[in-house]
Amino acid sequence: NIHLTIDASGSMGGERWKNSIKMAMALGKAVDMIDGLNIQVSMRETDNTTPVISMIYDSRANKLNHLKMLLEVYNCNSMTPEGLCLEAMLKKKMLVPSNAEMDSYLINLCDGAPGAGYYGGTAAINHTKNQVKRINNELGIKHVGFFFGQDSYGSFDRFKQMYGMSQSKAIADANNATQIAQHMNKELMQK
Image 1 (cartoon, rainbow, N blue to C red):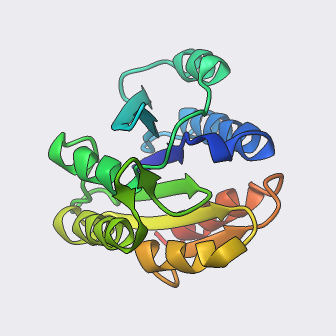
Image 2 (cartoon, rainbow, N blue to C red):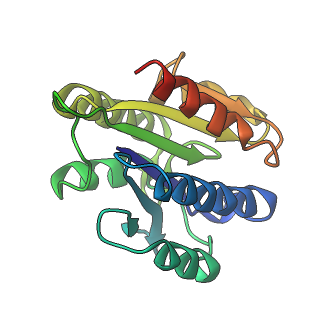
């Protein structure tokens, strides 16, 4: 099982957003053609400063056209409530845990550190890091975080603090989303 979660903050606009949408559709299409593989796609955003996590697709219940339709109308224009949304995903049981018959992966696409209203700085980074640990420890889900953009003001360093050194991948060119497909192919081929 793969859960792709995308940062829908305003800073993800332009090429980052277009390529995140392309990646979501490409993963959805690939999963649609492979028996025994499922995917969920969620967006992390805010309504004003209130964190919102939107599950827009689940291959176990939706047709691929559902994903295509929502990706065509979805937009990014909010803030980055990173850890708050991950915590909500845990509380609402939106993540599929690993078990003896199935491995589960979380792929995060993002371009910076968490921030939404009063939620930000070191406290938000540590909170996000703790939620990632909970996802790993409580649900047995492996994760990888893909950071879009340049490492301005140490933002990739903060990203690595949240997602781990070896689980954080920088993608400087938003057009090079093939790194995500290559990483997941390597993970799946090990099984």
